[in-house]
Image 1 (tube, one colour):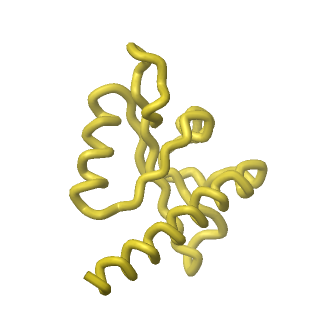
Image 2 (cartoon, helix red, strand yellow):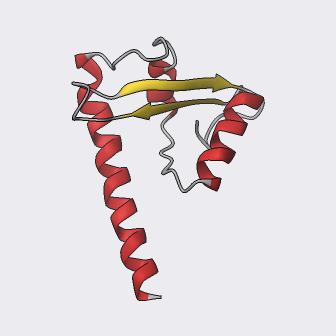
Amino acid sequence: MSKNEPSGAVKRAVALKYAPESTAAPKLVAKGKGRIAELMLDKAKENGVPIQEDPSLVEVLSKLDIDQEIPPELYKLVAEVLSYIYRSDSRAKEWRSEH
């Protein structure tokens, strides 16, 4: 989902889970559009789940089935998102420990 979506565009959201000890790649664990997407984002924020907005990636990932591992051709894009989230999350932890 993106803040840069044209007004009136249907919001979309996807959720990935990556457990390297049990799966080879991240899996799609939830997807939704409209009100469902908004609820997913609200729950993620409430629970401190990092959110990355990338409408193009959400569009592609929303075509996957629930519990489907991401295909190899998406590894690089998803790795970039995960890297961003891990960096942001570690910065947030540092900031919280300093304040």
